[in-house]
Length: 248
Image (cartoon, rainbow, N blue to C red; front, side, top):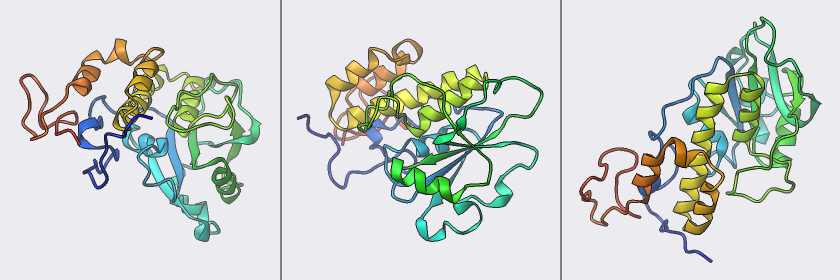
């Protein structure tokens, strides 16, 4: 069993939750999309570094994360203020028990929707869905490829992470530039977390079907460059940025 390279009590980035050695917050520019994105994130998921709801909040321009806890589920929006919703846009709430996804999502002159993603376990997502019932159309995703979220075990091959659900929607809306860039953010998040956990072989296997090597090889090279333990950068290594710092 590989040993985690993150020591107990080691410093972590306030944004992504990874140690400075593996932080990739500024490795890829943020993602701009015309869709409005909201993440209702369960309080038990809110501070987990592996959360892809947090990933959405820090990489999608304008995305908003709203904490959810059971005791406030009867309040308006269950943590999503009513003022956060744009009245001129249709609201889509994504959940496996929703109606079929619209086939004409990318067509027409209507403004892009506002998307509500439920970030938590499957049981928690069911509770959050009931809490936002009636706030918009509840939709289930069309069939997707097996999940690339290798950080947690999925109960079924058709189960995908919150970030992958957003990727499906961006593709369906025809927003290829946003989908392409956000896919890089997602895959880099998985890869860096695998490396931080000490799963180097699994991380290399993950790259085999990833666009990362072709799209951002320089970022992977910097991640793979071991920094001295005293924090002094080796020749050519990046200092002061997200990929600098010291080994945990």
